[in-house]
Image 1 (cartoon, rainbow, N blue to C red):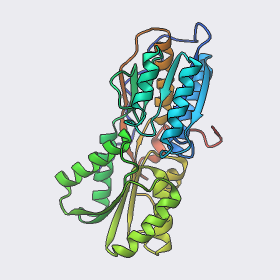
Image 2: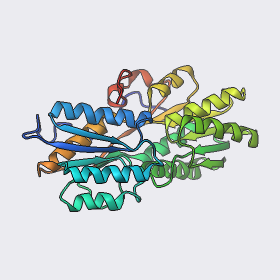
Image 3: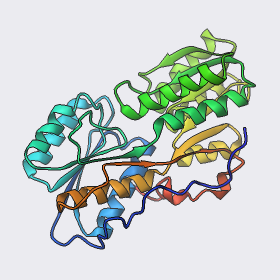
Image 4: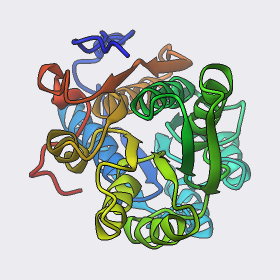
Length: 318
């Protein structure tokens, strides 16, 4: 597969609203699902840094994990009671938080959905990536790396998260259309952390001795998969792909342990979500659906990518 050497230009500008600084004291509530995830760390960096630039107050609440739906519901209720001027919400589970999000909207608080979207048609704006395309790119990369045939397993992340569902579908549809000799022999939607992935892949390698590839919806599970593969002395035999291009993934690409990662401009999305929220709070026009482009990154083009758009600085701590 031929990989383009440069990152696609994003289809929106960060100065689109003409907001140099907030004109009055503005408080934005930010509900994030999981700051143990490198993805949400980078997203939060974009949100926080843009809030500082615009001079707005940010109330940041972390649910502490994708499974902690009740915690996030309580946090969104708290932001509603605080009467923040607008919210940015990355959902633990889009369907589960819909009611509490729509209650906030009903009180007059505009809500911007970020990446993992609340399942509501009443959002002021949505900001994210083309997650279907990210799954499609992973299928191309992994399929080519495996020579178009063999057994594949999938660590797809939790069902109900819109981004995970779309990446999964893009991967599966592309396998069916372009790689009919690749067979998915196992899938988990429960393994979330790196440790989960280690234990899961340990088991898979015993159950499926011919396993040749592992799809990962995020880089963190890919890191766990690699530990298990190395432990089984299958390094190089089992191809690993991922999404998001965290610091860990960059090192895995450089070492040759990750064949590719499908990436998105995570930091830019965080910045844009904050800007959309500030615009909505000020009753200014918003861009209803903002999607950042996706790119396949491998050892062939890693050095050419502007990483400041994709991931937080290594020194950043949320």
